[in-house]
Image (cartoon, rainbow, N blue to C red; front, side, top):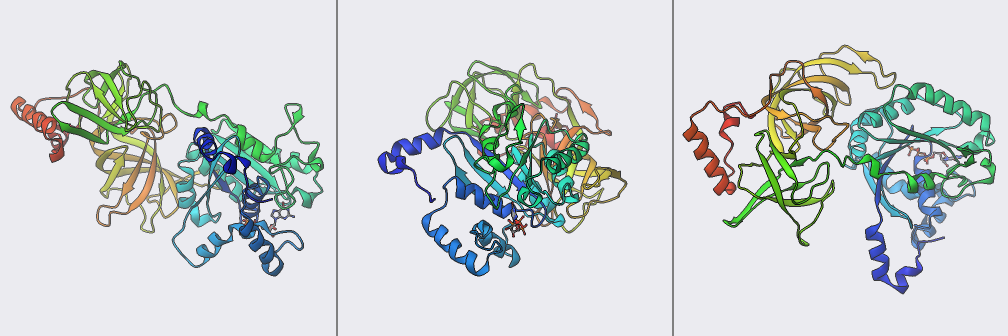
Length: 483
Ligand SMILES: Nc1nc2c(ncn2[C@@H]2O[C@H](COP(=O)(O)OP(=O)(O)OP(=O)(O)O)[C@@H](O)[C@H]2O)c(=O)[nH]1
C-alpha cells in the first residue's frame, strides 16, 4: 500500500513527462474541528497509494500509542506534523500538500477551521478552484459549514463539494444524507457558486473517498452510481472556469535591453493572446498590435492565462509598468472609486479615512475607504451596519483612490479584479479586496486628458521610453490625472 509506480523504474523520463502534462487542481479543505479533515487527507493519500513505506510504518506504530481509532491505522496522524506546529504557534497558517494520480495533479491548501482563521482560509482559497466542505453526518449543517461556504463563494470558488463524512456512524443512512442535502440546499440558494455537489463518505473506513463503497450503494447521481470524492476531484471541469475571452495583461516590467528590443513582461491574467491581435493600452486608450510573444523557451503562437510572457508591439507606443493591455474593442470603465468586498487580516482594524497603499494587479496606488456600506455576518449571510472592520471581518466598502484605474469585476477576472491593502507605516498586508464595480463617489473618465504643457508630457514620455530603468513616473499620474 505504499507509493510506487512501475513507470518510475522502467522509464523515469516518460513518468516525469506524463506528470508535466497533467492539469492541476488546487483545492481547499474546510470543516469544523473534528469533522475529519486530517483523516480525509490521510485517506486520500493512503488509498491512492501515495504514502511512502517509512511514513506508513511510523504512523502504524504511532496509531497504537497515540491514535484515536482503536485497531485501525489513524490516518489523521499523517497530517499531524502540521497540527503540532500550529499548537506551538509556529508560523504555518496554511499548509500546502501536493499529490497526483494518473489523471491529475493536486495541491491541497489545508486551512484551520476555527472562526478566527477566516484570513487563513481566504489566503488558501484565493488560488483554489474547488473547496471540500466537510460535514459530520451526525450533526448536519453547522455554523462553520455556512461560514466556510460563504467565504469560499465570496472568493469566487466555482466548485463546492459538500462531503458528508462519518456515514458509518449513522448506519450509512440514505435518509440522513438526504436530510443534510436538503438543509444545505436551502442555504445554498443565496450563494453564487454554479457547481455544488454532495458526496456521502466515511474517511475512517475508506468508503467513497477513493473507492466506491457497497455500504453506500444507494448513492446515485443522474441515475448512475455516484462518484467517489477522488473521482469528483479528477473529473471536475476546469477549463470552463478560466476566462479565455477578455484579454487582461497587466505590465509588470518594461524590458529594453538595447535600442532594438522593447518588450512588456508580465503574467497573462485573463484571455488569450496571439501575434497580430489588436490591443488597447489602459489607461491611455492607445491602440497597437501584438508583434511577438517572447518566452525563455522561444516565441509562442498563443498564450493562456497564468503564463509569464513578454509581449512586443509593432509600434513604439508609450507603455509603463502598471498599464494593462486589453482587447482593442474592450470597454472598461476608468474610475478613481471602487466598490469592493474586503477581508480584513490585521489586529488593527480598518479605519475609514486613513490612507493605505493599494496594490492592484501590477499597479501601486494610494487610497482610503470612504464608507463601509455593511459588514457581512458570515454565519447568516445577513448584512449589519458597522464603522470599521476588525480582524477576520468582511465588509462591503467604498474605496477612493488618488488616481483612476480600469475597473474589473473580481468574478470575471480575479487577477485584475482584486487588490491588497498595505499599511503605509509597517508595510504589512492588512487586507484583501474583491472588486464588485465602480464606486459611488467616483469621477469616471473615459480617455486620457492632456491639459498640461505638451513639452512636459513629451519629455516625460521620452524619458520613460528610452530609460525605463530610471523608473520615472508618468507625469499625468503625478498630477493626479492618471487616466
Ligand atoms: N467513525 C468515524 N470517525 C471518523 C471519521 N473521520 C474521522 N473520524 C474520527 O474523528 C476524529 C477527528 O478526526 P480528524 O481527522 O482528526 O478531524 P479534523 O477535522 O482534522 O480535526 P482537527 O484537525 O482537530 O480540525 C478522529 O478521532 C477520527 O478518527 C469517519 O468517517 N468515521
